[in-house]
Length: 69
Image (cartoon, rainbow, N blue to C red):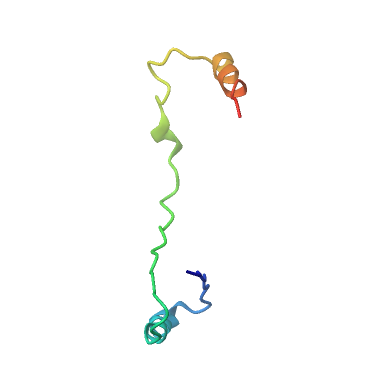
């Protein structure tokens, strides 16, 4: 099965395009809904992310650079 990705210049034509493609018996349409970008990230909601964790910057670096491929 081959796949084609289409980028529409005019989103108002989407329904017309889908109706047109659905008329073809050898094409199967799979609609994928794009996730809308969430609202801006609020930095202050992350406060306390590392609370009650026994870790420091040196230990984090050690773990980060000690990865195996």
